[in-house]
Length: 103
Image (cartoon, rainbow, N blue to C red; front, side, top):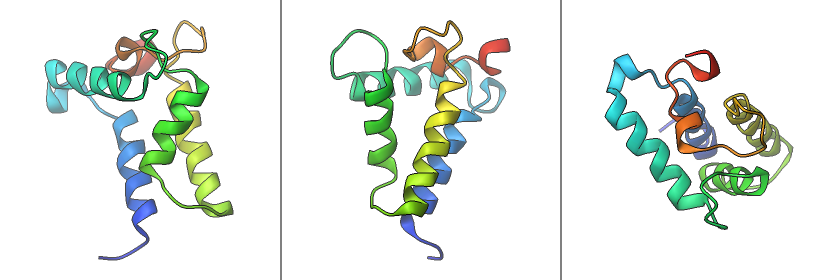
């Protein structure tokens, strides 16, 4: 194995942002998004807030240090581009929207 494990995990998590319905099928995309919300939605309000997204990213990119913090910030910022209604929460629908907010 090459490279730090956190870099591979960050890459996998960032890759989730690029999921395309044509590549894996809409049903699989919906299940994955719903699973992320179910796992990290601590207050059970149906969406992930900033703290919950931070916890999700931290789980995927463990460790500490400036490089890891930068990776986490970048991945979290990518997720926030999916907050189509700009309400400060990411729902399974927003996470699973094919083409992001435009599609």
